[in-house]
Amino acid sequence: MSKVRKIIKVLAKKASGLKRVEKIKEMQKGLMALDLVRMQQCLMGAFPRMSKDDIDAVGVVLDRASALYESRR
Image 1 (spheres, rainbow, N blue to C red):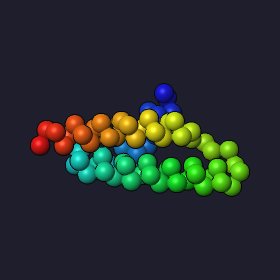
Image 2: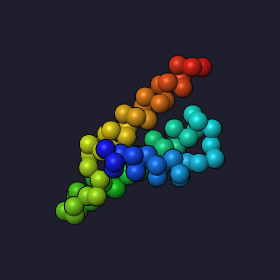
Image 3: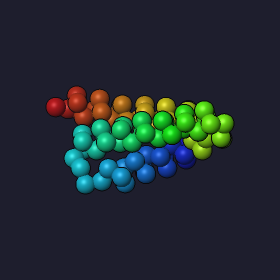
Image 4: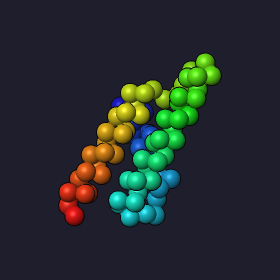
């Protein structure tokens, strides 16, 4: 679970200075980029630093946050 928190922290830092909805969308873009890097590392035969489960867990958190802010509008 600590890796999930670290990933969210890094994504939030990169998306700082935006409104909440825009920040979530930017974090989702960053998560997609991280997933692409992970898949590329797997294809090259290198050991990926992030597991698919961690990336999926972060995706679930971001989806829940997005749904929460969309329901409040």
